[in-house]
Image 1: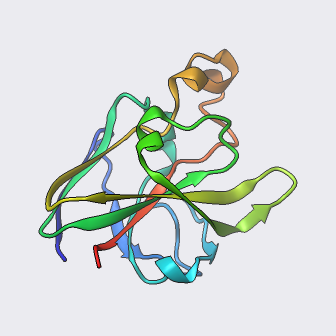
Image 2 (image 1 turned 60 degrees about the horizontal axis):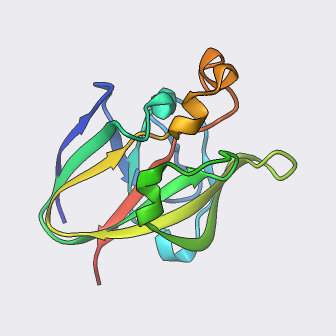
Length: 158
């Protein structure tokens, strides 16, 4: 499987790694994964940027091209009170990913996993912030403080 032509709305470069404990979640943060479910261990991880979390659910966030059908696994923060509309088309997997800074009392560092199969070609994922949240003055004024950007993994369809 080849992933090429990664382009982002923000213009920031998204890195490629593996979903595994100890690896960094984002390109611009020092957060490290703690727990990765067996189903996702060592799948390709696209490392987003934490500050891209303020992109609207209606905006294209990232596009990339693949040379075969893939499953995309979006790691979306449990703390976020709303799901972006585009993510409703994904299957919730009833699995979690955690970071080393995970705290159950405030859900920081807990990520639900949402899966969708895409055909060979261009894949587009949209912004992290639901419009409902972007209409909240406190959320915008704080630049989404204490909320997280999603990241995602990909692997070939079996």
